[in-house]
Length: 196
Ligand code: GDP
Image (cartoon, rainbow, N blue to C red; front, side, top):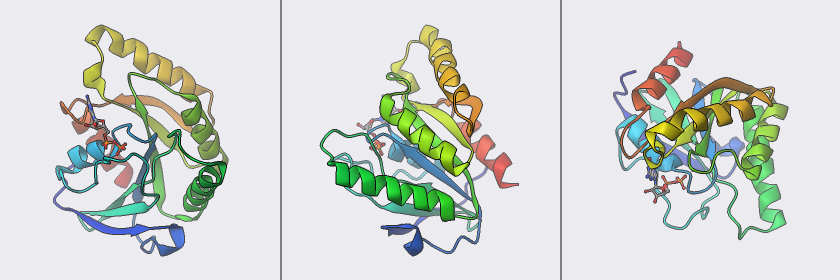
């Protein structure tokens, strides 16, 4: 896919303030610090697009980015950081759930998993939430550069086994590095195929 332009549109506190759902969109979600902003920036070739977070989990906003005036990349707020109250966790869940249910043109969710850690409990909980909304999602492993090449196949296989337990998860797992660029062309091709 050729990304000709990638620009910030809006940060919204909930789906009602998001742009009209008039084009396909792909949402990125993951634990705080998983490397989501870095991956979006690498994917779009714009290293200032998504803000890499110095203070993990500070902002709880849905960020829309306009790609080629044709579709949206959506950066959903991170989860899984320790210092969060039950109320905050519940409001995160409500926000995500209603976003997932209401965005008519949402084509796919990409659930980012830190390749060094694998699928964690908090990721499992989000996978269960995604299953309920029946939006199909794919696991994207981040920080591949932190793995030894001999570990890669095992890490992909283990994530694939977790995906297999969930009804709305796709079998295919992608391995990426925003630092080194591994898996980025494949991820672009994957999104381009969905946009057809
Ligand atoms: P976010 O909170 O999910 O948006 O994560 P960020 O993109 O802000 O990245 C969190 C941390 O992980 C930062 O210190 C990044 O430098 C680091 N990071 C992000 N992507 C990669 C990667 O591909 N490889 C490595 N080694 N570190 C990464």
